[in-house]
Amino acid sequence: MDQKDIITHESALEMLLEGNERYQSGGTCSSNPCPSTISLDSGQSPFAAFIRCADSRVAPEIVFDQPLGSLFVCGVAGNIPTAEIVASLEYAIAALGTKLIVIMGHSSCGAVTAALADEDARRSLPGGLPALVERIHRCTTDLDMDSETALDDAIAKNACSAIDQLLDMSKVISGLVETREVQVIAGVENLKNGRFDIVRRAF
Image 1 (cartoon, rainbow, N blue to C red):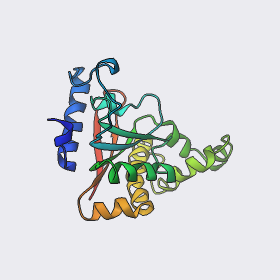
Image 2: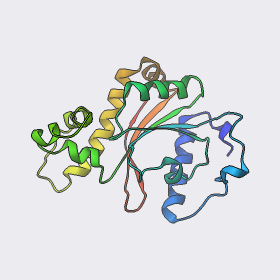
Image 3: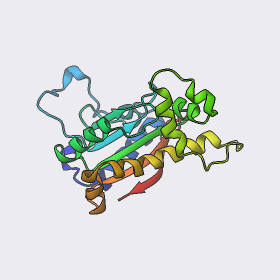
């Protein structure tokens, strides 16, 4: 299917999940040409937009086996929405016609791990990190920290919470979600096998 034909969030999500299956199986897609063989300077038509963790191991274009120009990707440690990222997503939605927003967390997330540390450890982090991890920490306070799955639970909870934060921060996006023109999903990539699992959907 040509990217320009993708006009719904349903078809956009279908393409992402099909690409993730290819990635997990170790397959390659012929629709991913080398930059030298394609022209990107005429414009872009991304069918999905991402808030991904800034972790160097997380690359949506690879994980979902999509070519350059097809995904609008914003990155920040802990995949939390900031004012700048929200504005960027509004551009993708309003100017580029993107219909799907993906909050992409991942296993073994360092930002979430830091957010689960005690208060003294969080405050002792350098620079702007204490403020960042505190935002993540606030959404994990109701979790059982003694559980063997505490980190995984917190990673999923943080991704889900990012949806609420995004919708609260943007009337543009929340309005289009309310009318079901745009969908926002949250999911987590397992770095061991590359599988992306959806943990929440919002219309």
